[in-house]
Length: 448
Image (cartoon, one colour):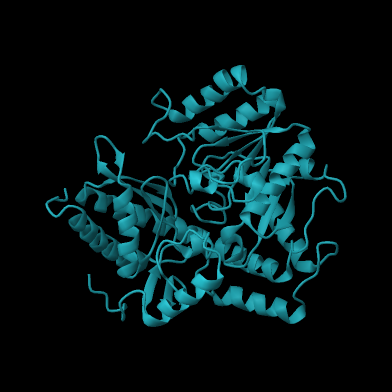
């Protein structure tokens, strides 16, 4: 595919020079997919250091919710920087209190909440785990296969989207038992409704034979699973988890780090099913690119923490709080609705693409959190891992920034301000890239 916005063979000379410098002094542990070296961005467009323009449908892994360098967010950061850059969480400042008040107003808990401030998703998860143990006096947890909750030692104990994230770090935090995340497209348990099957497994198998329910502090779950494949759970699953937790005095913890802040067309993904957690973790899109995370919990729970039970140095940083407040202004006033409208348009476009290409097994998602699963055969649903990897790389060379998830799923998480015109452009580049990689994989293969 010839793209007028790609001016040099990728990576270009300036990019290659920076990659060489990076190789000498930056940790090799980062899971980088292709050599994109960013210069600047505006909205849903980004440019590399060689002047090549790309359409960004990854948004810094769902972080740049308002688009790159939204002027409202940038101005809020500048105004905060003019006043002061930091005050530790031992003290108070206006923007931190404002953000906590805002979360109290918009949370899905249906009762007063309190917030603990952090810098990232993994730190937010760590805080939620500590809070659950502190409040319940229990030590065990239940997590889900395919989940991603971070890479620090507590959150890592739950992370199971790829074994490479765990390999070499055993033992992580003890006491975590994993169960399947319900996936009707790739069922692991018997039954047409995988949500009901998983709930039955927890209640009738796990609690009866291996894990005493009375020792479980919390169940940590993504309302829509991210790294595991952008999986949307069956209707009734989250409500079933809520009822199960209530029966056994277990805290229900929703990890909304990737799915929250308007990403799915609702402020929080759990609102699609009307289910309220006890504790919720936020990060990524909350700060439009600045590092901020929150543990949001029912006031009746968080107020049980005593002085010194948990804290940090950078939590509630004034610049990050300013960015988050500006982000919430934009998401609440316009971008949440845009994510719902454009997301529906995008889903329809991808499903039309699915009709033209037999390698697309399923398209799923809500709002602008969408997954397109690639298969070698629609009947067997065999994951097309190599094809997925090749497509992600080819799309980059054709001017479209994407990431994968799950076994063979292309995930789409563009800024929430994208337009239908952006979607149309992305579909053209995506289909051209797909045709190219299919032809390279098997020149005789025909699309359906």
